[in-house]
Image (cartoon, rainbow, N blue to C red; front, side, top):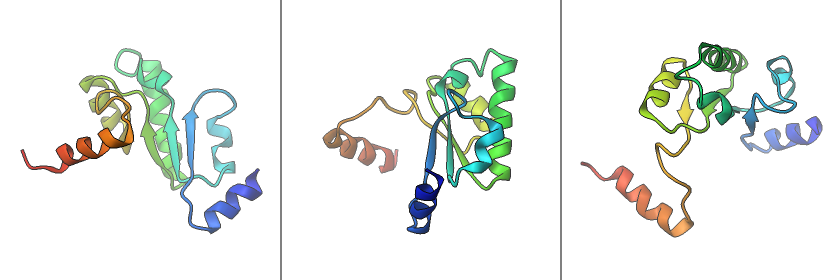
Length: 119
Protein backbone atom coordinates (compact mmCIF):
# COMPACT_ATOMS: atom_id res chain seq x y z
CA UNK A 1 0.00 0.00 0.00
CA UNK A 2 2.81 2.43 0.79
CA UNK A 3 4.21 1.97 -2.72
CA UNK A 4 0.86 2.95 -4.25
CA UNK A 5 0.59 5.99 -1.99
CA UNK A 6 4.10 7.08 -2.97
CA UNK A 7 3.21 6.71 -6.65
CA UNK A 8 0.16 8.90 -6.15
CA UNK A 9 2.28 11.51 -4.36
CA UNK A 10 4.75 11.45 -7.25
CA UNK A 11 1.86 12.33 -9.57
CA UNK A 12 1.08 15.38 -7.44
CA UNK A 13 -1.97 13.98 -5.69
CA UNK A 14 -2.52 15.35 -2.18
CA UNK A 15 -3.40 12.60 0.28
CA UNK A 16 -5.49 12.86 3.44
CA UNK A 17 -5.69 10.35 6.28
CA UNK A 18 -9.36 10.28 7.33
CA UNK A 19 -10.76 9.54 10.82
CA UNK A 20 -7.34 9.77 12.45
CA UNK A 21 -7.28 8.57 16.03
CA UNK A 22 -9.61 5.62 15.54
CA UNK A 23 -9.09 2.05 14.42
CA UNK A 24 -5.52 1.25 13.46
CA UNK A 25 -4.25 4.82 13.16
CA UNK A 26 -1.84 6.07 15.80
CA UNK A 27 0.65 8.86 16.39
CA UNK A 28 3.41 6.28 16.40
CA UNK A 29 2.64 5.19 12.83
CA UNK A 30 1.78 8.58 11.34
CA UNK A 31 5.27 9.10 9.91
CA UNK A 32 4.96 5.88 7.87
CA UNK A 33 2.36 7.30 5.49
CA UNK A 34 3.13 9.87 2.78
CA UNK A 35 0.06 11.98 3.56
CA UNK A 36 -0.40 15.74 3.41
CA UNK A 37 -3.44 16.11 5.63
CA UNK A 38 -4.50 14.44 8.86
CA UNK A 39 -8.24 14.54 9.48
CA UNK A 40 -8.83 14.26 13.23
CA UNK A 41 -11.87 12.12 13.98
CA UNK A 42 -15.09 13.71 15.21
CA UNK A 43 -15.05 11.54 18.34
CA UNK A 44 -12.34 13.87 19.68
CA UNK A 45 -14.09 17.06 18.56
CA UNK A 46 -17.36 16.17 20.26
CA UNK A 47 -15.64 16.25 23.65
CA UNK A 48 -12.86 18.79 23.06
CA UNK A 49 -14.64 21.65 24.82
CA UNK A 50 -15.52 19.63 27.93
CA UNK A 51 -12.72 17.06 28.29
CA UNK A 52 -9.09 17.96 29.04
CA UNK A 53 -8.16 14.46 27.85
CA UNK A 54 -9.62 15.09 24.38
CA UNK A 55 -8.00 18.54 24.19
CA UNK A 56 -4.58 17.01 24.86
CA UNK A 57 -5.13 14.34 22.22
CA UNK A 58 -6.14 16.90 19.59
CA UNK A 59 -3.22 19.16 20.49
CA UNK A 60 -0.73 16.26 20.37
CA UNK A 61 -2.06 15.14 16.99
CA UNK A 62 -1.72 18.69 15.63
CA UNK A 63 1.82 19.01 16.95
CA UNK A 64 2.97 15.67 15.51
CA UNK A 65 1.29 16.32 12.16
CA UNK A 66 2.84 19.78 11.93
CA UNK A 67 6.31 18.46 12.81
CA UNK A 68 5.94 15.96 9.94
CA UNK A 69 4.93 18.71 7.49
CA UNK A 70 1.24 17.77 7.44
CA UNK A 71 -1.76 20.01 7.89
CA UNK A 72 -4.79 19.14 10.01
CA UNK A 73 -8.55 19.15 9.55
CA UNK A 74 -10.73 18.50 12.56
CA UNK A 75 -14.00 16.72 11.77
CA UNK A 76 -17.36 17.14 13.46
CA UNK A 77 -17.26 20.81 14.46
CA UNK A 78 -20.79 21.61 15.59
CA UNK A 79 -20.47 24.58 17.96
CA UNK A 80 -18.68 27.92 18.06
CA UNK A 81 -16.96 26.78 21.27
CA UNK A 82 -15.52 23.73 19.52
CA UNK A 83 -14.42 25.83 16.52
CA UNK A 84 -12.71 28.37 18.74
CA UNK A 85 -10.95 25.75 20.84
CA UNK A 86 -9.63 23.64 17.96
CA UNK A 87 -8.36 26.82 16.33
CA UNK A 88 -6.55 27.70 19.57
CA UNK A 89 -5.08 24.19 19.60
CA UNK A 90 -3.58 24.86 16.18
CA UNK A 91 -5.88 22.96 13.83
CA UNK A 92 -5.57 24.32 10.31
CA UNK A 93 -9.16 23.71 9.21
CA UNK A 94 -12.49 22.55 10.53
CA UNK A 95 -15.29 20.55 9.00
CA UNK A 96 -18.77 20.01 10.36
CA UNK A 97 -22.39 21.05 10.75
CA UNK A 98 -21.38 24.43 12.20
CA UNK A 99 -20.25 25.39 8.70
CA UNK A 100 -22.78 23.45 6.61
CA UNK A 101 -24.79 20.27 6.42
CA UNK A 102 -23.86 17.94 3.54
CA UNK A 103 -25.03 19.42 0.25
CA UNK A 104 -25.89 18.06 -3.16
CA UNK A 105 -23.89 19.50 -6.06
CA UNK A 106 -26.58 21.97 -7.17
CA UNK A 107 -26.94 23.35 -3.63
CA UNK A 108 -23.19 23.60 -3.17
CA UNK A 109 -22.92 26.19 -5.93
CA UNK A 110 -25.50 28.44 -4.26
CA UNK A 111 -23.85 27.99 -0.83
CA UNK A 112 -20.43 28.89 -2.22
CA UNK A 113 -21.88 32.01 -3.83
CA UNK A 114 -23.27 33.09 -0.45
CA UNK A 115 -19.87 32.55 1.17
CA UNK A 116 -18.01 34.81 -1.27
CA UNK A 117 -20.55 37.65 -1.53
CA UNK A 118 -19.75 40.68 0.63
CA UNK A 119 -22.04 41.22 3.58
